[in-house]
Each structure stands twice: as structure tokens, then as C-alpha cells.
Length: 91
Image (cartoon, rainbow, N blue to C red; front, side, top):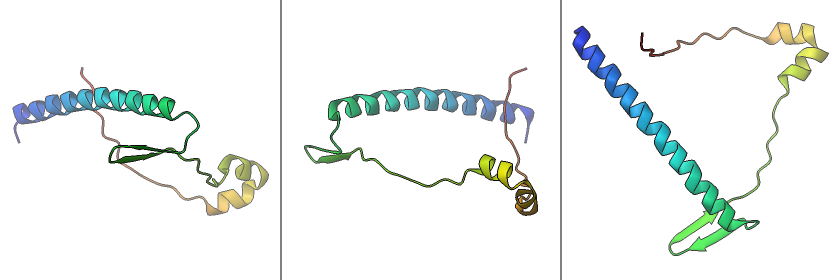
């Protein structure tokens, strides 16, 4: 693989990431507009579309509180996790 090919791929990646950011902002704006239209409704029918905006509840484990209350037990059960981080920066 030549350096020129990698440069072209990186340029394309940066371009697509920029488009993605722009699209995500547009998506967020449109969602917010629909949610404002819905006010307190959980369901809204519009033509062939059924839009739902429902409340959900989930239970999350509070790791920080557990670690504070049971430090020894926390240390017993924690395990290291390794990942590779990919980043592109212009120099």
C-alpha cells in the first residue's frame, strides 16, 4: 500500500466524518422539532407513520458507589480491558 493511497483514504475518511457530523446535527434538530410537536403525547400518527416518544426506566449499576462502599470486593472482581484506539490528526 502506497503512502498516496493511505493519504487518499484518510482524506476520504475525514470528509465522510464531517458529513456524518453535519447529518447527525440535522437529525437531532428534526427529532427535537417532532418532539416539540408531540408535547406530552407518547404516540403520534401522521399518515403512514406512527411516532413514539415513550418513557423508559432502566436500572444501572452504580460502580462508583459500590467501589466506595466495598473497595476490597470491587478490587477482587475488576479486570483489565484492552482496546485499540484509532485516531487521525493532521500534523
